[in-house]
Length: 359
Image 1: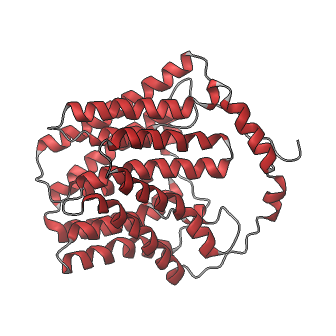
Image 2: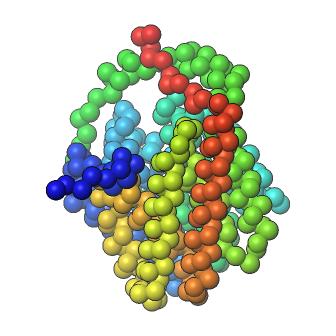
Image 3: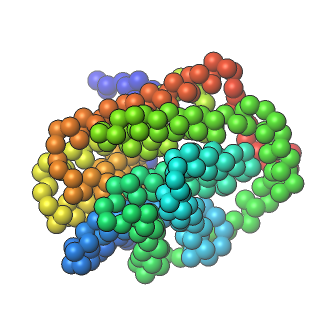
């Protein structure tokens, strides 16, 4: 007798086996983390090594993303990493301002408006926003690096690109000419953007993101004794472009993030010292390409502990830290779900897809 699971749970646990995961991708993940961590330990700068390793794992994206645009392999890799590199540079500049949080929220909201222009630009804007907020979070937790912590993080993207060029020898023969013929013209995109900005539907994503980040920032500053910067990052990670009548996907991602926080706590408990944590991080980084290709559940579950490992390394492992992270995750998720439901009650519709050039 086969056990039948509810639809949302089936979607969460679904495993995609269509894209094969090459050994080179796993090697790139492992070396992307292990080499910088090893050099950081040798030079007495373990946190810098972990920052670069985390950037190598997260910032440069996966093979599928790198092959989604035309041009040579190097061009595609740079196009994938460019929003992340721009994000960490922006975070570095914003962190030097007297009031960095309002400036960050305004920057993220403006970038979110570009989701109304085209699907590629929407993807780039969402990547930019997540890594801008993550960069600000890393700057706050980067002992000894200050505002340069985000730039150190950004070096990981360049390290990842170098590894891909050296180890991922499979050339791409895909052609983007057929897709290019079906894409809307720049004039169509500009007309669509102007139309969307004249309606609330075109502003719903930037508004939800800005309001959510604003609430998260206020809560973080209201309770400085707690590790509530994670609320801000949780809001950025969970806020989706589309409004859902029942935000099932957001709740699923929230549950997965909670699992990642718990996994991070377990790793800190069993792995003591930067060397042991470096080995654990390298193993997780090796598995990230597999998780990215197979399941959003696995990818989010592995990404969260990697981020927390870098943010929390060097801090004393106390039960209060896990409680703060779990509470922050729940608060961030509640903010995102509440805003989604509020805008849904206002009958705000997600903008329709861009028309093709042939319509």
